[in-house]
Image (cartoon, rainbow, N blue to C red):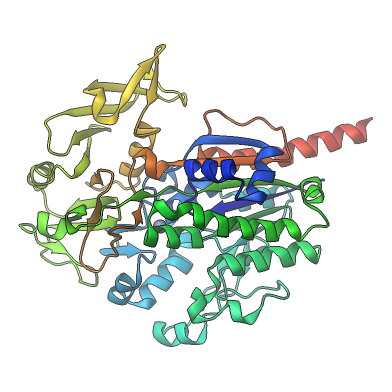
Length: 496
Ligand SMILES: [Zn+2]
């Protein structure tokens, strides 16, 4: 009976993968593509930030259902900015305690909607075991003990009494107690990001395979590619992918042969988002503190009192929350005066009005109307379709530069019930706010644009049908069906 391993490579992009395949520089990925199926047009969730994307991968739904709006968002109940850790400056400002608590505990146990189930929970119900290797989102049926490394423990000034939930086997680098054997101690220190690295994830995965302890389903997160592309830009993504491939080679080498790996496992390789190259000069950072300076904006680390707005920066997208009535129109006018802004979206009568930065063009859409899109969702659409690059192809709504724009934008904007504005930056630009990281001459993501949104999908070792065109949210169901199909075929063997 085959097991399933899903390799989630941060910032893996189809064009980069294809260049590497053509040049034969990534033998492990080449092996998996040649022996399986490959799609270059898989679409991830929006905002294209790891935290909310991981929630979509694990639950199979967009943020309007799973309720985690992004990496950074405003919580009106706690009256605070929730930040799962975007850069050390943010963490310093918000405090290590706040960030550690949010990412280790609140994200999984409080923010992620309890009405939806994760893939780990569903597999457990079917008697299947799973592992989460270093994924930020990991809610499952088993409790795990947090063990903050000494330094972190000192800075956070609080000890985790709560246990966190996860699948049968779970690692978060060195931050969770694990029984996995032979993970070298030197992979777990402060300089190695406490083990939230490719090296640690590979060591843990190899150990599970070699000791025969691999559960039925393994989700393995490889983060290093993201850091390298942020720094050096997508122009250097091929060199980075060669490093990722070495990690995948190591995992395949844990078996007697690569063929043997495919006998034992179904391999799925995908990504959480792409990245867009950011220009070199200062002007490629859209400074939202300056653009919105006439409004009293809540800054990281401040308590809410007389503030007008909260700006939550998710790199190439931002949520802007008006805290007082009648401010929305004034904020909109200010945002629309900026031509470097791509789209500005607001909620309106159960739908969304989208305007283009620097122009007067706009489009309105709402679920359940006369138009059906290529994913089978139906919409009422009025206004200028060009704003979202929508086109009608044989009577079906198809997408151009903003893949699955209608469902994905709806997903983000209805992730919370309070008034909120979504802005995205045009390609080459990203948003800047005090304390948030910027990436001039590097790479960045977060937006609705295809550069940030299109991810590759490789499936090897099964012919089970895939919904096409594929989306990240379909993978949960795909994996569950794989195991159900096996269960069915086992039953029919017994009956014979
Ligand atoms: Zn990133």
